Structure formats: C-alpha cells, structure tokens
Amino acid sequence: MSTVELGNLEANQRFLLESGVITPGVRVLEIGSGRGSLLKWLIDQGADARGIEVSAERIAESRRLYGDLPLQLTDGAQLPFTDHAFDLVVSFDVFEHIPDSDAHLREVARVLRPRGAYLLQTPNKWTNTVFETIRWRSFTTWREIHCALHTAGQLERRLAAHGFTAEFANVPVVTGFFLAKIRRYLGWPGVAAVRVLNPDKLPRRWRTNFYVRARRGV
Image (tube, rainbow, N blue to C red; front, side, top):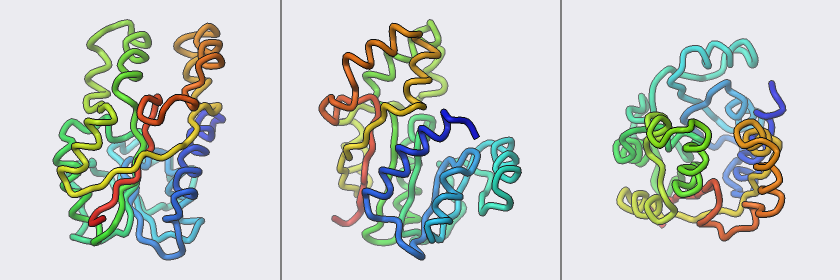
C-alpha cells in the first residue's frame, strides 16, 4: 500500500473516529470500497461492515491485499440490500462520481435504519473545478469523471430533500496524500501556495473537501 493511500485513509479514519459512530456490532455499508483498506479497518474496529465497488479490478486487488472481504460488485445508485439494513452508510471520494445524486441518496435513505447516518467526503465544487481544469488542461474533460460536484449549499439542500440534516465536520486534509497530489499536478509552486494558504484554516464551507455527517430523523 502506498504512502499516498495511507494519507487519505488517515483523514477518513479520523473523521469516523471523531464522529463516534464506529462501535462494536454497528452495521456499516461502505460505498466505493476501492482496494478495501477502509473496509478492512472498519471490520478490525468491530463493525459489522460490508462494501460495494464498481471496479472488478479493485475488488480483485482487495482480495490480494486483505483476503475475502465482504465486498460486492455494483454501483452506488442501486444498492442490493433490503430496506433499513444498516445503521451507517459511508463513502469517501465517491459522491462526485455518481451521475444521479438523487437516485443515490434515495437508495442510501432506503437502506438506512430510522435515525441512521450517512457520513461522506466529497470535493468542494469551487476549488475542485479550478484544480481539475489545471490538472487536465481542459475545461470539459474532467466533467465526465467529477460529474456531481456540489458547493456546500447545494450539497446541504440536496441532502435535505431526502430527509437528511447535514453537519459539516472539521477534518484536516493537508496530509501526505494531499501534498503528493498537489506536487504531482501543480509542482512545487503549488505546494508552496498550500503552505501559505493552508486550506485547513479556511472556513469549513470553503475548504477543498467537505466532510459531512448527514443524519435522518433529526
């Protein structure tokens, strides 16, 4: 596993731990499990966790890394689970890739138990639009991948439309993962800019990434 992946995993784990939702036996669905790093960690914490992933190649890699994890091949708009099956749904760097945000949130709401929670991380539309335009050197190419970017207000309103109350969390994102990404695409001038204008010190709604606790029935 790369240092870059660990850096991102560190921020996500911090968010979950500080939210106080990972308790022994809690039923968790991770949407977009990738290589399985967070899913394995959730299981190690005592959670009754399972995951879904859209890439068969990543599922195969997760099996090489961690063995036979409870991981299914499907997407985030059609969840193959019964109603009210989970206490908690989590996703990290996934929401912005799902074309139909409303279909996705309807499914998340369906599989959550009453007063359940959806904890997610997704890039800020304003900052990510600038970064991805520079990264791809195009105003349009990246839109196929990051097709569902939201501002803080847009995300809050979309969650509310599906019965969720959103709370934005204070999670530092300037990790090894973040700096390596900046250095790769923006070079050392980009890293220097981050040192001067640290995104972790911006108001929460203007940060590069949103960490959100969305609760139902609150």
